[in-house]
Image 1 (cartoon, one colour):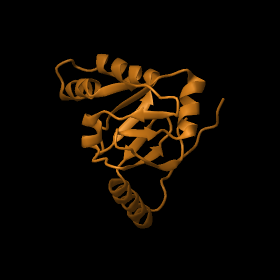
Image 2 (cartoon, rainbow, N blue to C red):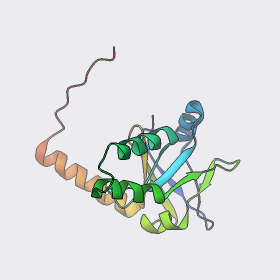
Image 3 (cartoon, helix red, strand yellow):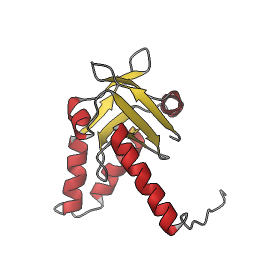
Image 4 (cartoon, helix red, strand yellow):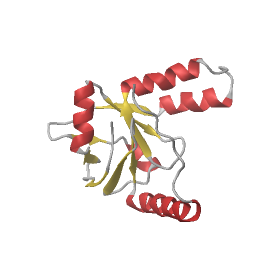
Length: 148
C-alpha cells in the first residue's frame, strides 16, 4: 500500500528518489514500478504492474470502439516501466515531466494502491481544494466494512 506525502528534489538528469516506503512496498510485492499520465489530474500516477494489468483487463470489458476504451489505450501508450538505480532513484521520462509540470521538486502522495507525483504548486492547489470541500461539506460519509 502507498500512503503518506513526501517532498523530494529532482536533479538535472530528471532523477528523483522514490519514497523509501513506496520502494519497500514494491519490493515486498516483487512488482516493477509503472508511471503514467493521470487521467484525472495534471500529475503522474505510479502503480504496480498488477494494477496496470487490471486496467488492461477493464479495457477488454468495454466496447472496443468507445471513448473510454480509447482513453485507456492512450494511457497505456504513455506508460513506462521504471527501473531504480542503486540509490533508489528513478529517471522520470521527459513526456511525464512535461505533463506534470515538474522541474526541480516533486510531491509524492500515496493514495492506497497507487500514488501521485505532483509539482509542488499543483499539489498545493489540490490540497487547498480538498480543504475547501472539507470545510463546506464536512468529511466523507463512509461505512468501513470489517475484513473477513
